[in-house]
Length: 451
Image 1 (cartoon, rainbow, N blue to C red):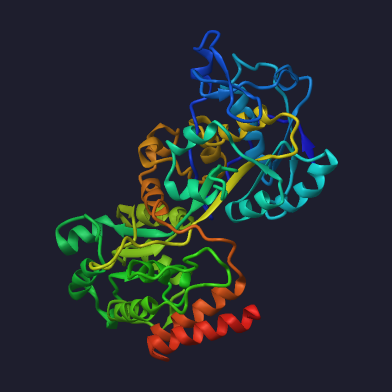
Image 2 (image 1 turned 120 degrees about the vertical axis):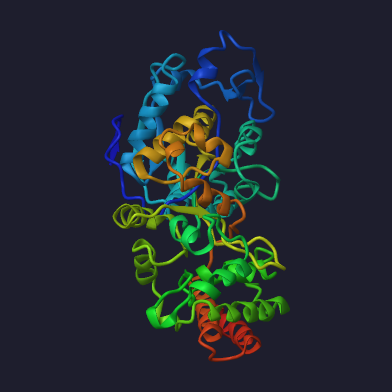
């Protein structure tokens, strides 16, 4: 499906929110330049406007003679970004035109390798961060050139690193990301502890649990899904274990001696959330927090809508902050996801393609993203206040802060999740020792991977 439409569609559900990096404010800087000096870019012979911090768009695209071709998965987002871009650049490129095609992000890199070479691919395409390495290897993504310095000043280092090739160049613009975080009931904490300030360590949580927990009444200080590595990883990482430490899918890190010690610490947390893993599902733990019965929960921004409703109905205020660490450990990492936009290596209009890709990480592009999909642009926290709607959202900064210390992994095989979940359940439910659970994970992973 192709369209030249420019009207934003209705807002989407806030579930599966993702975070992203920045860009530059588009229209104001360009409109105020008044004939800026143009410089040759370091590569590709493109013209770089040093004052505006933008590439100069090719004449065929700027005049509207040829539309810039975009690959998006979401029609509403495509229309919203087109509308926002035209508004931002109306005084500089009033005639620019766009054409978009709906392409699933999971398929974009593979399809671009065929369509790009045939000459009918998009000039830019959206994908997932764990597809960037493949896009670089297959030659379907082009480096961002001068925009690297702009983007590095607006986003977390781990986002930049996830889209950087072995040659040190950025090959995609981070657009959105998602991470779990600690959410806390300020009202309930004030009642229990006399302060609404959240815990920063697990030891802080344990101190509250000593006063608040009442298993007979199903009262627990904190809830999460203890049988899934997606949640347990934040504890294990704080205690010194990292999955895939070298980025090699054949080396998940289950044989790291630090893992057994980290699992022992994790097992010790059952004293404050003493339920079998099978009894704690996302739905049950989130329902108790929404009802105002739980001071803390570890979950993701997809729960914001239910928590907003619950807070209004049950008379409490909640906040979002990074996940607690072990007092003796490192900051708690988490699994992060990230959507990106890349410039096709086959495009005939590399300057225009780079300008558009960078726009999605600008204030205006981020505002269009948030307004259309509810996804969180992972600008540095101090930049979020400049995004329409985000400044009024008190919960976004906590997700972004956790995302900044999250791990971005290579594409994880399904058997990582099944193996790591089995290990987590074995420890939490006291089915085996931590050392035995880690050893079983090594053997199970190797068997499933065919190593």
